[in-house]
Length: 427
Image (cartoon, rainbow, N blue to C red; front, side):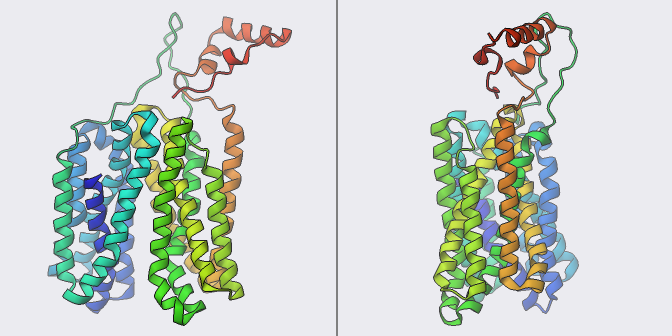
């Protein structure tokens, strides 16, 4: 937890500072935006390859390298703000961020017993959220008072602390992919596996639908607050994003506690999506109608709480649906869904802002969340009959001709026993 909090502290410290530093050095706004864009592009590409690295190299070296790369290359910003070196340094830091985000969530699933996984994942969100709330404004304040070079050095130092803490992580590797074992006495032929995308698609889209809207909230809500109430909005503009992040942090942890108590994830998924939807609708309506700015605060808290719960529920659902040996893939898919959704939301809903103003952009974000709710409800219905590829009694019995005939006979005479043939999937 300390290693991850320090790494995210380094990232949060530099995130708003680098674009401002580019502009202060007479760089173009396109270059300032490109620093974040190439950072996220390198992040997503790295996330694709991180599960293989965790199997081959192990968590400790990957996370140590990732923490180092996330912050230490920022020293390069001191020497040049020309386009080529700035973009190169940003790409190197994106590599570190991509590897770290995948490894951290997967490591929790490797270390923590399954019955505590919800709470542990929620606590991970608490450490990350507190780090962001502390270091995002700190970087801007230090840069304004002491100059940006000091921020780069502090960011590099915090990243080194994270790297040293990573050395204390248990030296384990991600488990090799487990192949399904044939039934005893059955022909030794490969068993059909359910494609991974079928199992993780809906949780991934649930995260993406809210992270797209979060991209709009983080980019445009402060400006919308100021536009709605110039006097009060100036004071609330910076606070409202912190309230969104704080709400996400608290409710992410609560969803984990509920998941652990029930022994299965997904209980709060749909209510959380509905909360996020209502929050964004309230934001859009308040801006359109010119209502009190305090309703924007309420909407931001409702959206943040729903988003935090969906984050945890989606990650736990992926862990639950995939074998334990594939937690690194689950973590990678979750992070890609989150990061890609945030980037797409900022870009696409930014275009909507130009055409339909802030209220139109948030209304479009609400429509995206509503689509995600429909998919989750459909997945909940299909999930009652879902068969996964490992250790599922119903799926394995169907592979034996004698057993299949027995099932048909039971159905015909009305003596079929649901507890025998409709056993819930084991993961």
